[in-house]
Length: 431
Image (cartoon, rainbow, N blue to C red):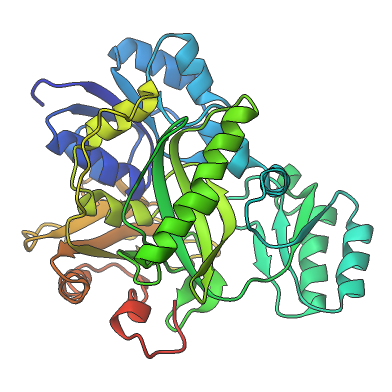
């Protein structure tokens, strides 16, 4: 594996495979915990769960890690970065207190209110009866959000009043999401086009990455239930130079100033979920980690050294980092298991992974594992994220979908229109 820094990447998705691959390409050694069949091929895996804080700290100490890169939100919200810091281990990601920007929707909305950051009007309820009365009195469908982490299942963009009330019932009374739904946030629906805006932060400064766009609905034309993401592309044309400047000035900078003023400076990556309407950006939500699948298009389009970027953020000083120009365009397609996003089937054998990859193409694993016979089988809902980087988005899409067509397993499904809004600007449906 050569010399270089010793790095632990926490997580098991295509996000972690993409980050780990980039770090290995920079000459470093990577252990992924717990990882998947893809991460095993670029370094090695350690069987430690992302929510096992003590186990991850022990792993970092044993490996004499120079840097721990935390992928998913859960370990951040339960204090992994704090625990690593207490042992003198450098970690990329926010502290538990700063991770509340994602860990609590109510905290996030009230933070925006305190610091005058443009977001949708909202109300917070712990009593489901009061929440239902609020919706019925409003007489229009609202967005219903579970306050806590819900693995992408805690948001319902209701089309009717009854649908909003049903979501309140499922979240708050039936507790289908556990304690995450004990408090609900109701907010107005915002019109416009969504975008994913990531910035790497050191507590006071922010380095913006290429604006991207995710595709949440499971089926073509932006239809069907929401998922954790069915594909992404970058750059997103909706984020014009003017919008980019406004997002930095009106959302990112006030967020960093506000978090610092409240005693919880934000380090790590801040994923600003945007709704953009007629050139005006408003904040939908914060995430405190890279999006997945967005990471698979952000990694290849960043023109700098990923290790230097992540380490500088973790150290709290991005000032010496040299500006890095974006590299072309990238597009990725999620190949999902039978039953996803409901109850995905596992154990299906994947074929087509052995052929050489075309220039610019990549296959990032997520829900995969090795069977006893050495074959790769499905082990989750989003199984692979298949994509490419090229000089144009059109070329990236062509390479990505050609590669998708070579990979198979029983019950596999994917969207055929990733990047459609950018590739076909006149279309009215789709992402």
